[in-house]
Image (cartoon, rainbow over all chains, first blue to last red):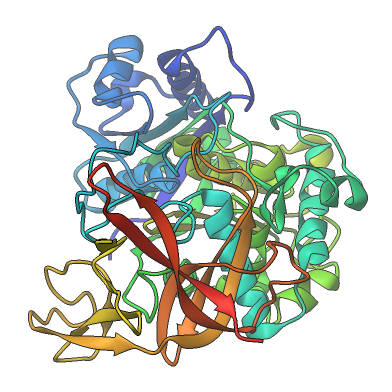
Length: 399
Length: 130
């Protein structure tokens, strides 16, 4: 039986605009913060997994040159919006394999001011038609055959659910956003902490119906890092370190299996359902045991489908579940009490570790004004379109 | 005037329609150039005509897109009797009063432009049936 893995230290930078800090400043801040929180130094770290999509190649090694070149193996990972969760998962695997007893995962992104992240500007047209790519297209397809923009893709994913099961419309999606923005007012780490009325959300700039601007994740700067240890190692550390440690009861990464139509519109459901099922089995818990959930609300339309995918509600019952008030912070299954990606912000590679930070902070009883009282078990979920899904189930230390 | 299809899987002519690559082992359908079947790993593909009418199973109205892309437009997925097809909803105002989940649509062609040689490129979209 492989070892249990624990979070010994974890840290995130405030999300938002960091004009005077570059990728390495932010990554260093998170990494040094995680080591300080863990009570370890760079000499204790046996493996580093590092994620950064925008900054170029070899981010992990560049980070080492700032925080300590100890010669340990570095795994530079990339899995779209699941990059941070993937980094975490790599360190979990390294510890479970027995190769190391302590490792660190770091994710960073500088995205302030970035616009749409896909849906590239068209190249100049003219000359004569030339067939190109795997569709033999003679002109760019974005806008001519569907949309390649993320707000539009995820809008369709939410509307597909609405078509299948009913009960969801523009107003319901907007009310999900209203919840997350309301939650954000209690989170000092969030980029945007303004509460919006439902009217304000629905009458804001439409990006891709039914997603208006506040219903889209915010492009911001940020970093997060975690130091993980084996259970054997943890038992050699101080009682205070053991008390604050958070158990990783499940760590799962999936890709999307083939389903009908999945190459026409991404199927972000099946891989999330599989990841959740495996995670609950690994952790020996069910969705009803969760005291809080941080899930990948890159758009308001995405949050709805993940209530169902994570088994938080009856199949097909996500709209009723939300309408019951269950996912507000005073509900039965608080979801995105951090404010979610719509208000906290979404620095892509940092997100999968920052979500774990949020859950861990509640389990430690250190979440301040937004603390979910008595939280014992939580789940963190991310999706990287393409797709990759990371699910981590965390439990408070019994010590 | 000479015409070319916007994509390889669009067949022009008197009765424009779409053709899918269909795995001869498992029947999975694709619209791109294939290396193998993503469902079963099969290497042989036949060609299958896709029905030209179907049901709009999801859509979005894109108001904000990359530079050079005309907005607003309606992007959606149409279930053509079991085959999912990506496409724009055209020939109707791009608003949620005129575009609704579950509406019946049919394939139509859409002009893309004419190149320096005078060749016209033709794309496709789906228009409401009623």
